[in-house]
Amino acid sequence: MPVTIHKKISVFLSCLVFFILIFPLVSANKKSFDIVETALQPPMNEPSENYSNMLYDSLNLNSVGLSKQAFDHAIKGFDYLIKTGEIKNDNIISIADFSLPSSAKRLFVIDLSKVELVFNTYVAHGVNSGKSIAKNFSNKPESNKSSLGFYETSNTYIGGHGYSLRIDGLEKGINDNANRRNIVIHGAAYVSEKLIQSQGYIGRSWGCPALSEKLSRPIIDKIKDGTCLFIYSKDKAYLQGSAIINA
Image (cartoon, rainbow, N blue to C red; front, side, top):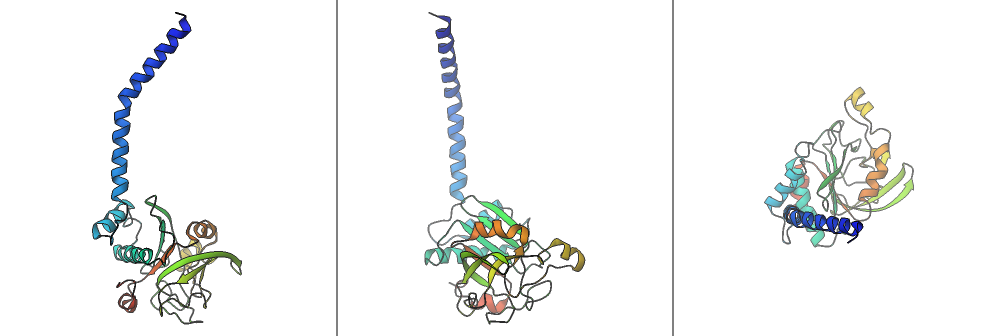
């Protein structure tokens, strides 16, 4: 038998032995990964407290400052909106936690399909909602205040602030005037760490959840076309009056 054939047979047998030895380990690891992945998928019925806790802990959201209360309300409302068909894209949820000051990175963009915190950055509130912390909210045109609650992201366009994203308010009497008020997501020079260093808080908008100019485009491209945005505060009037929160 030629030497080359001997070598081929030897290589083949070595590969076969390696495959026999390694396959059970690969299979076991895949099963373990599948178990973890399955555990983090939303249950078919109303999401349980255990699911919300597991997701919150898996993403280490406490360490980056997102309050558990804000997250629990977001997940509950998100699930309700998916079931009622008001939100089309169930892979992404964005949470702006306005219980935090604007000097904190209080916008959290989460990819639920990958169980990953994609963005954690600054977001502005309305000039008449407060200075460092947003305390006053309104759905009225020309109030220059932020509106709380659940939104569905819509289409992008080029406007006065450049590349921007329209958002539709989903809560009647709370944020459903968003389009009429021209409340959109856009980049702004006043969303800047330099302002935090000089005055203790970022600049404020006329009610839009404005982002830094550097991150506005990648964030908009990630959350556009039918994803859920939840703007949260400990505001009692909102928490008691929201039909989605209390569904």
